[in-house]
Amino acid sequence: MNRFNVDYYSASSFIPIPDKDYRISSACGISGIMNRSGRSFNGEMIMKSMEIMHERGNGLGAGFAAYGIYPHLKGFYCFHMLYDDEFAKEETEEFLKKKYRIIESEPIPTRKNPRIKEVHILWRYFLDAGFAETSSEEDEVVSTVMFINEKIKGAFVVSSGKNMGIFKGVGYPEDIGDFYRLDEYSGYIWTAHNRFPTNTSGWWGGAHPFGILNWSVVHNGEISSYGINRRFLENYGYKCTLSTDTEVIAYLVDLFMRKMKYSHRVTSKIFAAPFWSEIDNAPENEKNLYTALRMNYGGALLNGPFAIIVANNQMMMGLSDRIKLRPLVAATKDDFLFIASEEAAIRVVCKDPQKIWSPKAGEPIAGFLYSGNREEKITETVALR
Image 1 (cartoon, rainbow, N blue to C red):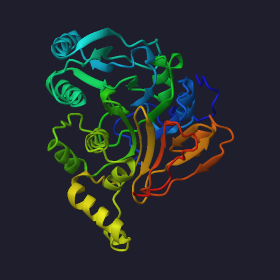
Image 2 (cartoon, rainbow, N blue to C red; image 1 turned 120 degrees about the vertical axis):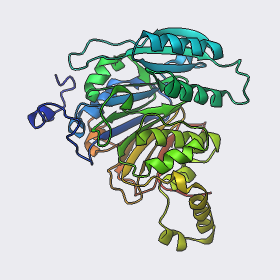
Image 3 (cartoon, one colour; image 1 turned 90 degrees about the vertical axis):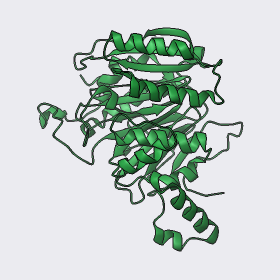
């Protein structure tokens, strides 16, 4: 049922049964909607944006990240979990109790959907980490996520931030959103993904978004540098256990933007570094900076075609590879910033945007919550300070 009355041809008209061996390498659809004033809006808006990109997926994965959805418990880390069985759940809970105070523990609310086959125990915990003895509470949470994903069989941390959550599974976006009852949530940033797996099979944990702490990433593309990126991250204590290129992007974002405190502009020039020929012709100060970034962080360069949307509690950023082999469109209307794979995904929820454009290859488009100055502009180019 097309609950939003969006016209599209059903994928079943040319793919009778979703098949993990049927691949369209340029597929996958991403969308992000942010209200920069922090005003919450219903989850149906992002679901509608995704439904019009139905054909970009094949039913083997979809998901959403939402910010501002737990205001009554915003001071606590919220772990969304997938469990294969009760044994994994019991082992994880015993581990969590040793490190945190569990404020709330409950099933993630769902509703029956005939197109979603639920195969996991879906659970969420609100955790107080205030008594952690380590120097960095956030580092302790990252360590917790790494341990659970690597060491506890049948347990997977879907998201681990504050006042946010990731909801994902095997299915089309409109069905996953309905299954998780996203129409009952309100948030001020929403990102979403419609998956067409190319190199990995479709399973609940492999659907997008991927997250760590408050970060979430949705991704259309194929990162050929996965092995190099993974080894680079291991030097900083990150454990990549999901065999997917998007996992490394999420951890790289956390490394550079949280731990190293680099701006989104600098981080984008690590991920989508200028070609050496461009660096040679750049002004001296930029040449020195870009050279230093490539020499020091070459292992974090994302090779291959990609378009990503990155979000946390304060911002949303879109970025494509340096020759833009994957599409990305942006638009603004009043306090709203929209980023998507297709213009149609924006116009279906924003009939008359004030501005709509295609960001340049390798150049980030980023919006931030207002910090008192409502004249702040959304950044469209990399103007390094």
